[in-house]
Image (cartoon, rainbow, N blue to C red):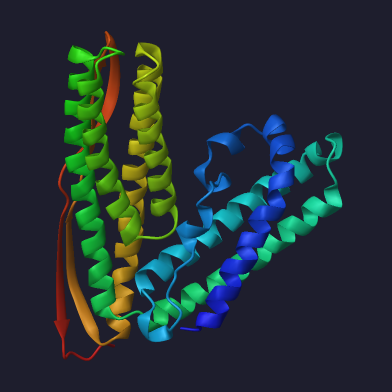
Length: 305
């Protein structure tokens, strides 16, 4: 793929995001949905979510580039839709922001989306079957990591509920070591992907840090932090599954373009259930996911019509 074009895309997208920031506070007041939409919010490590470090075509991780480009396209589309909505209903003209400058920012996102779509098509035409199967494996491993993390979180809640005391340092040390285990799993998932999955992993790591800080503040802070953690955990699981199924719908065309015939995809859909955990007499629903099962039947050496 064209590495120079990809680097131009990530640089222009980063500039569009930075240029949007001065308008955020004003827009959030009239359109609070922005605050809750992960595609409309970015953090101090935002560029790490969609930029890759590889500088040579032979070393590029196609999976991460594909995730990155899709993220840029989706975020650009979301920001553009929000600005369009506020322009059409007259909101922009009623708040004290420079509409011409905001319109220029919107055009930058529109340009990023157009470039991202072209690169997406290029990647689809060059992606190899072994890269596609590697991405399937990444989704499978990541969902297993989330299943493991769910069990650890359940045990963590039980430890906090039965033994928390704001001056008990041994308990703090024990809980912090458990949080490190979960954080390592989340970081492994973030490392496998770029884009929305990595973005949501950063949110979850932030929630883990908030929970750690809450240990010194008391029960109310712990309940609030654990609830936020459970919500971000659910968002991460849901998006992992969504991205996995979205990719599997493209898998057949990738295999076919390379002379392989995908005769069957068997998927046991991993269900998300909620298991209540108790914290100081408050029940918090913790997402629990079952292990996914994916079976791909690929045949080679057959002529594809």
